[in-house]
Image (cartoon, rainbow, N blue to C red; front, side):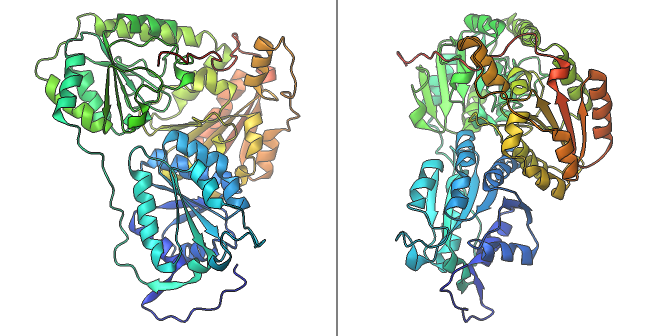
Length: 562
């Protein structure tokens, strides 16, 4: 802690900067926070611990803390909060801050700073780093600093407001250690005043109606920015629209609904359906390369795009109509205009159902024995279970698209493509759930090793998590890419991998390693019958390879005529 600070003289009408932070989070309904305790955040975490109103989950690393807060936010639908130290501590969080930024998660990252007399002076103060605000600016939606104890409440309110305003994202706040230790009058108003997007002019809704009003086979493409728009989407489905989703938009429409293709965006049957559609509205999605075959996937025309970020217009695909606005408001206004008289083609719904069946069969043909693992897992897990996935071979083949989810808050995945985030995300997701709800997480052995220390966090918090480790002893996706594109030269992808079930047991977790399908069924039954965490390590070498090789996302992209 500060080597220069002296004990403040204060009375009962003042509180410390650390307590201001604690009271701010309490006032805004934050039930849990995550982080690593440090000499540069001790006053805040001491206040949280003393007051005892917020559950603090001590992660084993700052990267994990941000992942936990991110997943908590996605599942809970509210602000996620993570604490790191300054300098190296905040630097450790950079990768997972990028993930939160990619996913548009409203995460409040609160980091310490050195004493204000030494700020930005490169004096060699402990935990000091050159231009920490510059680093944080690059990985955050915004970066703020509280220069005095009296500023803390206002800075936090502004930070949370920015994080929660669409397009949402993580915001970093620096609070120097002497500012945390200082005292100020007890703030009287700590509540966040959320901002909303301006109402879309009626003339723009008119333009959208003109585009889809004549269509008889209209399709919605729903992304993560539409996760709060489920009610409006259902109204459009009721009058005959159908939909497909991005990975981040999964569950906006339950994936067993006959009018959704789910996240089967790129199967041949889906592409054939697009050719027959006469309008598409993309809502809250950036149409990422991995979901459009490098922007070469032909989407229906005319193409309308609705997004909170106006800069997305023409970025990935040229649009015939771009509306800057809130997904729920725009789709609700569209439904208001169409509900009384709109009619789709007679065979559209049956064609969508047939396309979904064919696309599912096409994707399932790659699974082999792993299809039975997926089916049994889906059968045994309650429909309200949260489904968390790391970037791993199993997720690329079936976790992202074929394992059905039924609610927009049930799916959590590392959208930025960085491995090693699944376990920490599962901890955050499970913290957001009630104690009797299951969270299942799909990880690979390579990714798990990046954050294996969080197994101890899982054990300590005793969360209701089933951790499924698909162990192929290396980086399976990269190995397949090397096979496909580098003449089967396998450098640096075959890893020395320990018995992960044994490591989990040493950390106090129930765990088993399985080599057959029957063992998997028996072990999953055991995991489902008990509360608390359970680790299942699947020996993929014993079970055998997938029937078809997944060799990564597309490498060729369209760069012209956007």
